Length: 197
Image 1 (cartoon, rainbow, N blue to C red):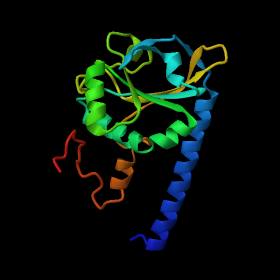
Image 2: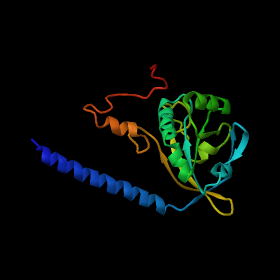
Image 3: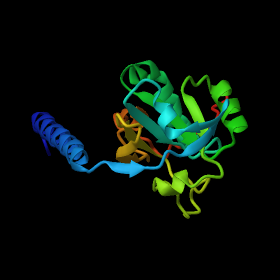
Image 4: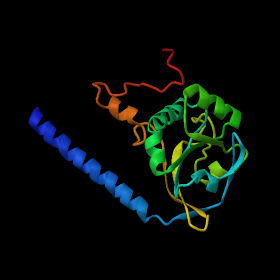
C-alpha cells in the first residue's frame, strides 16, 4: 500500500509534469504561422458586422465558437466566460459566435445575463471555414464548440493565431477540475440548460 507521503510526492510530480505539458503546448501554438482569414460578415443585433470590426480598439480577439442555445455544455462554458468578462476585455476583445439567429441569441443573452457580444454565423461559411463544423450526429447542431484567437494587423487584415476545441475536462471550464476533487469525480454528471432552483 502506498503511503500518504508517497502519494503526495507522486501528485507533486504529476502536477509538475502537467504544468510542463501545458507550457509546451502554449509554446508550440506560438510557433504556428499566422493564418490569413477573410473579413467575414456576420449578423449582430445592429445588423451586419465584419470580423475586423469585432476587435473594437484592441489588436487581439478571442472568438468562442458556440454550438447554440440547445447545447447545455456550450451554455455552461458561456456562463463561465461571462463571470470573467471584465478581466478578458481588459486585455482583448471577446465575442461569442453561434449558428443561432440573432433573435435567439439575444433572447438567450438576456435570459442568462451575458454581457459579451454575440454574432450569428447563420447562412455563412464561417463555422466550416474555421474548422468547427461536424457531421457527427451526437452534436446538437453541425457546429463544434471551441475558440479561435485572432489578431488584426496594422493594415486592417485579420489572421488567426491559434484555435482549440472545447469538451469535458478541457482547460476552459473549471467545473470539471473541481469535480475531479470529489471522491467519485463527475460521477456521470451532465450539464443542463436549467437546474430548476
